[in-house]
Image (tube, rainbow over all chains, first blue to last red; front, side, top):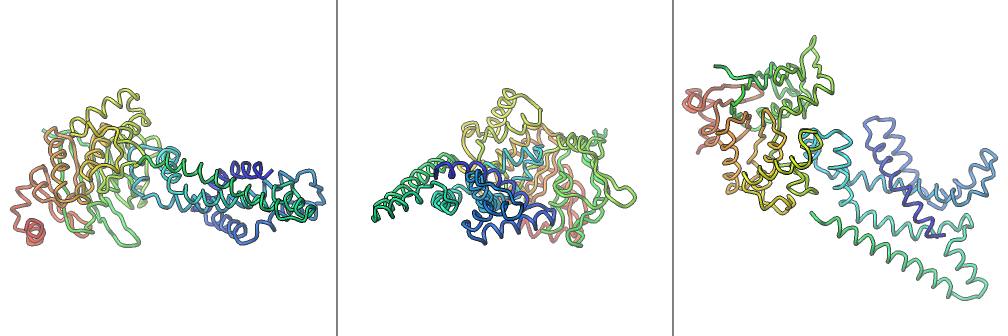
Length: 199
Length: 254
């Protein structure tokens, strides 16, 4: 289950974060202010609280019973939260690209989309990979928070077994699980970084 | 005999934060002409190029390439042509930047070919051939697969000249092409520009290299405080009695 939360969150939050970054950098003041507020909420409140809100708010506000949609609720809460963090990472990367890159592209006849996807974004990816690795590793550990919605997540199961058997062994196993998971994540990201290091 | 007019700027004005950087600049460039723009820092030299290449929007005046109006004054406010016309006009000129602005994630070859292919000026194969011919001419044939970060400043600037030439512009602008280079590397870049001048490439060069400007230019423009202080052939300017001009040239030649 942890793996599913992890993969789906990455799948949704990475592109969503880019959109959020565009909103944050928009010249339209209202849009940028709204997005800034959203980022402030996402970063300023505990993810655990956000999980509870996303899962229970529809019931308390609209009387909707979403108990069958536990997994989507978790994925939405995680994605919306991580998109905020990724957005700021993207923004940092995009702002690090010298103005001259845009100017050269413009003079050479690149349109806006070509400039962004061919010239700017590939350079941004290289700049932000270490920060994305950090965030990804945090995500692996954050999946343990899904227990607030009683999702059958690794750490929750370990806790139950530990309580039943009155031993810390299962918790140790859970710890090892997260460690190994993150070891793999770090390894993969390092390979990606090396691959991007061609210039 | 008057050659075809490539670029015509009339009464160009530009302000940054209320400070007038260009005051009524008019400049006509004919085919095959090499024009150098000299003058102290902040005199507006680079701003002319940035307005002419539409990196900056001008505040007043008009801008025309080969009879196509890019921007014109209409009852006091500047109006730019529609997107399609501007795209066409974009193809008339090239710009070589002071800081090269090569794309670091592309090989030298891709830096040169991609703009050509994307703009539809040539297919992949032809663009590659064109690029390799240019690189050979500029003495960079063995660098086709290198990345900009592994090249010297002079090599990078030559690549960026090749990149601009591959687009086959009618006119090529240079914005202080050697100012970011070590003194020992300026020579190789100036040599390339001189060779282009010998082939009658139409060029406008903003430069601080007085000796070079004198050798290469058909006409030199001396800018100061946002206006064209004086202009003429290199002989006229370098033998001028004007005190200000003499002081400026003397300072740089010393």
